[in-house]
Image 1 (cartoon, rainbow, N blue to C red):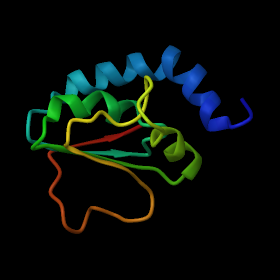
Image 2: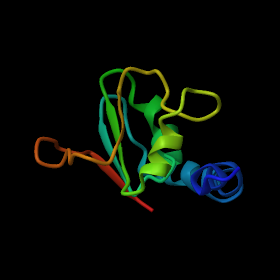
Image 3: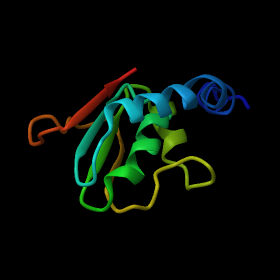
Image 4: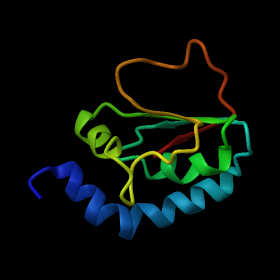
Length: 109
């Protein structure tokens, strides 16, 4: 694995960030239909865990400045990637959804 973002996803996320993300999502308690913003989402562990809770009427947007992290997140589902719940905006680093959106919950790592 020569890509640091893939190494981060393979080694850091399962041991450190997945348990933390689970606690974070439970604490925020997002509801079906809400919109969630995951700032500095990295490879998207919080966004991936919150998306199924939002259902098809909700949305989660992951923003990160590192395009390599977003590239890992955007890979097809194989234990990572965006759930196909119809409610995810998917990873995005080039536009800000802030101007046209009201967020019910935001996560910043």
